[in-house]
Length: 277
Image (cartoon, rainbow, N blue to C red; front, side, top):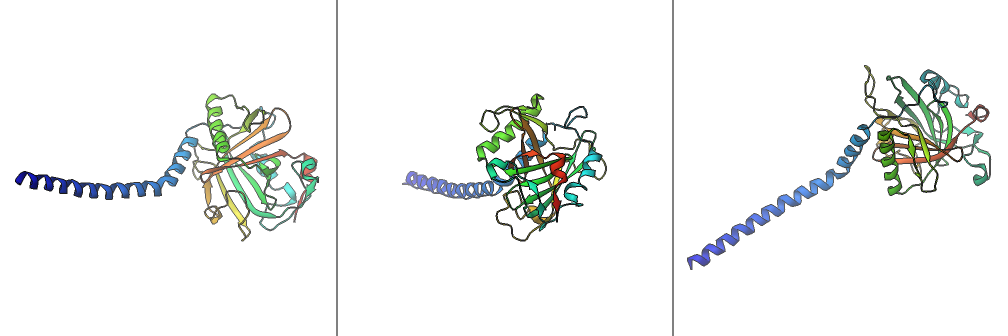
């Protein structure tokens, strides 16, 4: 009888321990699930900050001196900068054959300022306009571009991040068959960490929305409510050209996902024909 009572007591204790353990395990799993997005975000930031950036070299044909790059921001579209609600008159299309027209007049949904750090901590600012066509235009690295949004799957975007890191680690700047269409892409810039920040500088390149229309639907860019706070947010990017035509691949990482675009560099004549009103 006493033995049976002991067994019952032991089982009762085990039941109590199981209930307590279940309670704490459940709370732990809930906390893990709650923190998972933030932790994944921080891991990705750490991964990207843990590799070197690629800076355009002065001997490269695509190099633009930071001072000249900043000055060009005052000339593009004959305006001192983009503002939401403006119309970009005569903006050339990325692909006239596919679009059926050689130019359009998109509305600026949001203006975006990007600040990156060249080798030696030389700072460069770029002005970007997000348009109601789903694309972006403006100056990146002192050169004029027009881009259409490039819808990639999550798996393809993960491949972009993997290629960015591997290429920089290998140092050969080549991203083979990046989009799965047989074309190889050569990175010309991949901006991010500022390894030796001067007083007042950030430790990372950053992006800031300077103006945006109230209507947020359909932006197709990292303009979540968090991005629309007009604050400065860390950003990473990668810009590459392929070995078959004049298309340019551009991807921006901010928040926790890559936002990808496909476009081309504008000629000086095309850029001179644009007016922002």
